[in-house]
Length: 182
Image 1 (spheres, rainbow, N blue to C red):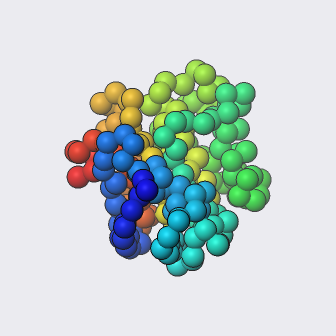
Image 2 (cartoon, rainbow, N blue to C red):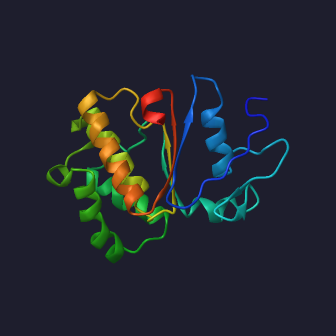
């Protein structure tokens, strides 16, 4: 068992850091929370719903920043946000109203029409974070959000995450950096 005898509660507006070396089960735990993995024993409730039984309803209220950026290189920054928003059934009007504030949050307003291949690693990470917020999630899951980033890019990501906490978002973050977990 990679994840055995784990029990925790995270309240709305809190941040939980899952700290451990590679292979410790952090990503597996996130997959359980998302309902993409099934526990072999025990019970799991996320946002008041049983998972994996109601995982689809839960995922509609979660934003995910995966460990590796999975942005579509064939589309621009804005198109990546728009297409992802459509997966959640968001209307064109809602997306057109929401995308400018997400670009501003990610400090990418000036790069709205840029192709993904023209962005730095830090810009891609910020875009992935903005994309995870497209559905105004209750819970934001971030799997090693700053791995591979330079110190300046890491600081900007952490400033943005603190803003989300002030706004009442709940964050679940995996990391193998002690200072980030703290």
